Image (cartoon, rainbow, N blue to C red; front, side):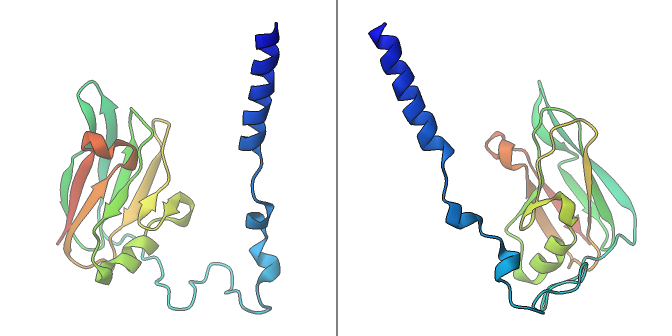
Length: 166
């Protein structure tokens, strides 16, 4: 009985340590911003690049995880500038799309072309968990070149690919 009491006390201590947090880190930035400093809704911030819509063909790349492994299908694809790539979650999630080693000349435009609602961080989409979820990334105004992609949760399992823009 004494063991259970000790275990209960230790559990409460551990859970209490995990549940807190720094309230200072949750300040609302809207209340600290200078009046008139915000850009109008939907407008890019000063110095930012605006998203460019797909002007060409849309190519599909499936995100798959099954008995054969984790992969993009196809892993390597060649498109034209202005085309879009639709990434569709098929199985084995969570999956996402992250661009690696992007040249500075292309970084801002490619990042802007990832839909804001689908973005987790710079040059990276959110995680997709359910079959049928998808994101289309435009390569309009993106310079020609090879763009390495990786699924962050499955990088160690070599879920990688290359999008070549002509």
